[in-house]
Length: 306
Image 1 (cartoon, helix red, strand yellow):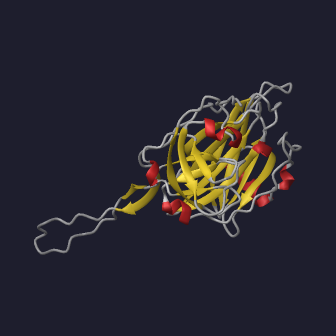
Image 2 (cartoon, rainbow, N blue to C red):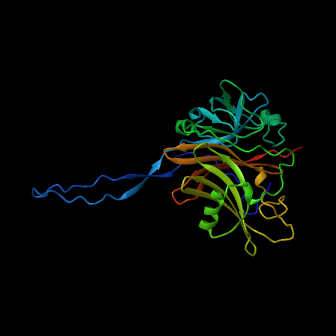
Image 3 (tube, helix red, strand yellow):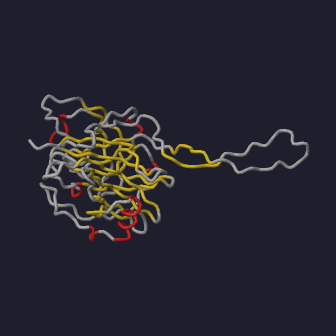
């Protein structure tokens, strides 16, 4: 799968600290000698401090759902202790050694080719994990503890993974109206992506194209706060591809899925996948103080049929 505005690449595993934005107040400094007078205390400046998020990566399961293979190299596999899979509770995992490259490897990151792919393996504790979806392997207990219940719309039938263009009416106007106002741009289409009961709602929108300037966004709405993950593109018209080579000029939101949502020390973290003809892009996104999502991880999983 190719993207016009998204580079087809992997950002790799973050081997160090993933830095998000949090705030704390710096303790005011009191002069050592004030001559007995009570010093005037000025408001302390607000300074950014890092929120620690331990390393992790996406992986896929074998045919039994008992093993997961990491899709990126991991510096300390023994530190990975959990996996988060869509539609299933978090599972405990343990490092099970490094798997060498097989002689019959087809290059596909699928259950059928699991034994032939090289990478770090992890054994699943308890019930098996789903085999047709990407799971996130993590060393971060806060990410797992902060998982929120997520309600998602039914997935479109395979293999086309497509459904008719969705009108704005499918989304609540309370979602779309503030977005159109804030971005100064009318919304042409909207797709519900998922909702946390009593919490954030996530949806995708396609804005009205201006000249050749096309724009779609994933939006998270949490009370009065909104975050955007933008997909800008160039529209050449006449049904030509816009966001990727096989889209026919239509934003392929039907293939986009929210896999999990977590709140880590007040920061919204979203796991998302986007299917295509040859594979899947998997993202780990974090809501930034700027009102946008930042990419913590972007991994491409190649699954093209034989």
